[in-house]
Length: 107
Image (cartoon, rainbow, N blue to C red; front, side):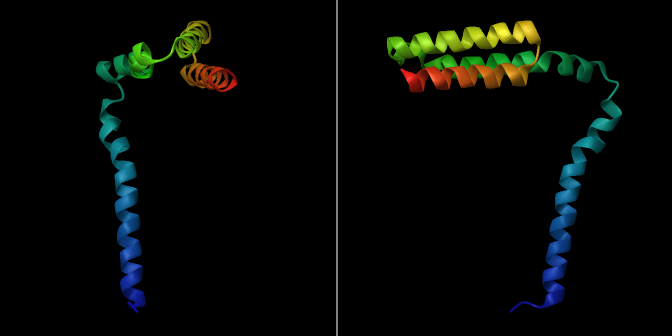
């Protein structure tokens, strides 16, 4: 059985490394908060993420059955419409995914 001091040291080192790794992004990004690049990325990154997710999702569409393609098109249209209307990426993703899953499981 390992010594209690050894286990305490291991836990302390693990906690320090975990804390440092979680704090590092904030320390590194603090000087860049007023940067034009960071401001640009914060404005355009959600749209970029949505486009990448959409492309990743529809990459297998030509191989899917006709009905699956229809459900996918409906879900994508709902997701895009909701994003244009509400401008809330998380809501659009969840609703679009829910509609696609519901359509795929019902028919």
